[in-house]
Image (tube, protein in one colour):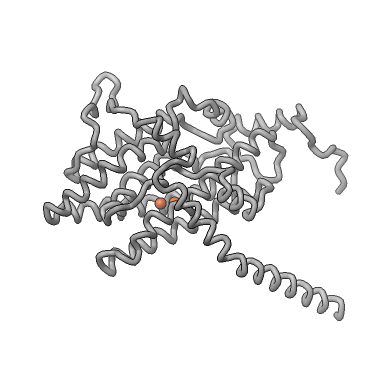
Length: 326
Ligand SMILES: [Fe+2]
Ligand SMILES: [Fe+2]
């Protein structure tokens, strides 16, 4: 069948109408559908940033793999860190359907043109941090990611469904580790509290700047990419975490954190947004180390990629030769 329809170029009005109607109905946009260039660019930025966060996020916890306190803890942590690698790979694949290659994405990460979550620029100083990251960081990730299962771009939404199932295991293993430590010695309880004190504020920053300083949120919500604002998600996270902290017996390091009867939500102190901006700009405690590590892994793996490409070229040449002979 031939089609007389012209190839879509630019923001053609008829295509835009179809696109808007799809979003309006709550249906998914798929890779071969026409989409506004701004939508494509926003998604590439967001999905790439998400993929990079999964991959860079392996480092702070990977730091403790060889020092896990027991075989059981090591098995749990290893499974969790491997899950994060899988998340990165699904998300790079989703991003590739938007017309950008994984090689390009990795290069944009290591030369600083694309970002990853600010949280992974903080160090892991004790084994309690493994628990705190699972509880607070994966907990915050769940708040962010559950609504993304309904995001308007098909490959991203479908990747998120599987990722969210694994994130809830991550959150639980962290909580269970902290609960075990809280039932231990005074020294273990102090380790947990010290870790929570360090990670509470960076965890609040994971939702991004306050809505008033988040200029892209409105457009992302209109396109159905984002489903909730940063402040809504942060509030949801605080409300979810307070009773869990109580059950654990840890104190969240915010003296002004309290239930507001009128709002039906907790009031809490905002994190230090100047610190957030510094970390985003590359001046956090571990930015240089994280990127240097990723760059080295990328360079060390070059021969594997070259060998795989050579093998693929050779295999397809052999297949073509067989076809020609038949
Ligand atoms: Fe993940
Ligand atoms: Fe996770």
